[in-house]
Length: 170
Image 1 (spheres, rainbow, N blue to C red):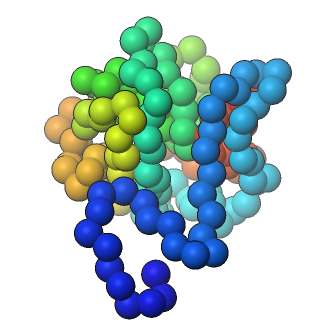
Image 2 (cartoon, rainbow, N blue to C red; image 1 turned 90 degrees about the vertical axis):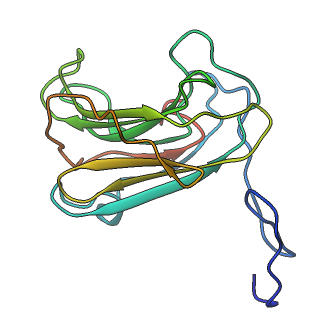
């Protein structure tokens, strides 16, 4: 916003010349996402602080417990490393998971936080903060980190593809 005008609305703003992306209807055979090849700048060392944030406007509520991944930076095969966001049910909110590189059958989730509700069809601001030792999850400015679970550990990825809209495979 370079014109000095601040608009008092909730959610992301688009001004002349700005663009946004929408993702809907993808599958593993036809992904609807944007990917960025591995970049060390998107994968700081495990003890280095970072923040990742996004705006989401989910079209529907997730009812089966799984849910899409709007922002993804994880190695999925072999020993999982990196991090990922998942959309859970509207009453559960968002999940931020960090992987410790120790497998791929459940024990590899070093830290996990789920919280903050959303309303389908409404913009939600989601932020994860890693201070180098402990993650925090903020949804619409509210810290939802009361229940961090997992055995601990975070292994930054050395090969992860950064993806917006879905897993790197859709």
